[in-house]
Picture (tube, rainbow, N blue to C red):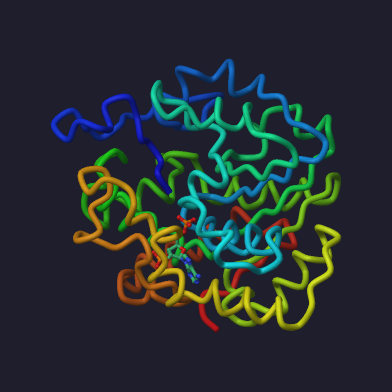
Length: 302
Ligand code: A3P
């Protein structure tokens, strides 16, 4: 996730950790907040496919799966560019690498990426009835992954220590706001719009099964050999070794993989290494309160 490759990205000395500015009450990167007008006015097309997630829920994984599917399971075709070039990230709009402008210039059919909560999605996506794939990941693993990402991405806000970070996660003070609002908002929207709602844990459990769901949603036929190639190509170890998927093409002063690699662990249940018992219980309580009234449930281990 090249979250903030901004105008000073080429100059290691100029790289600064970003601040957050609220957009309709949701903390967002200051550059995104500044350019909110053009983002909100983004013109979706009816054949756009949007991949949407809370950050660190498995965005890159589903992006690579979808790109493979759209290219007949041919890894050579998916090696044409890094994943962040193949699928533009619409709400990132710093002045040099304008992802919004790249998306606007793209030929149809487009596949686009966003982390926006449902209420901040540009209205044209709803008006055009675009297909959307949403991936959700359990809050505990999601929070741990987001913490390590803040440590390695030198343009993310300062994470502080784990205790402070978790507190910010639980109170919705990180970029993109509350994880609870995000996963619940998209869960509710799926009853009204063409949204395929997937879970990271299900993908870990049986990737072939989840890939078949995506193919059916996109109306694509997948032969068994192609399906098997996609499963192999998008396994964690393959993606970790793939420079077009693992973000090693980002300049090291922006993403410091020595602090924590982008492809870090790729598991369900890693949170047990990070959470205290009290922190785990606190999160469970908040989860019960925030998601209690919905049919949305998560698995924190397999
Ligand atoms: P961890 O930090 O827990 O390892 P995003 O792409 O949304 O930024 O999410 C990154 C998270 O997804 C990281 O989680 C990364 O390791 C994990 N991930 C990426 N590709 C994966 C794959 N093929 N299989 C399992 N997990 C994957």
